[in-house]
Length: 90
Image (cartoon, one colour):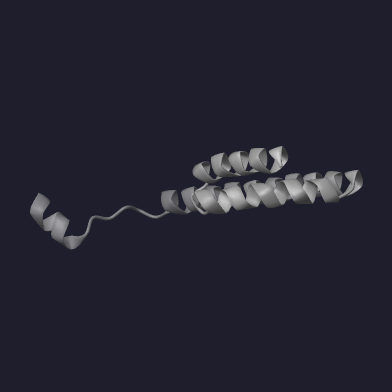
């Protein structure tokens, strides 16, 4: 019982930091997470941790490449003012 309360508290705190999950959803996910962690074996926990780490690294690398591509594309094209802004400036 105490584990579920702690899991709900931690899930609620994590939900406040994540915009995609609300407070009640985070609490429910915390309760589910504690139950799942109690049921799975140690090798399965390690596999989930390694899989999450690899997925994060791949996504971070992909976002970095997209950001690099966007910055290099913007420097190659000349910046032009819209016609309305050009007329007002003149």
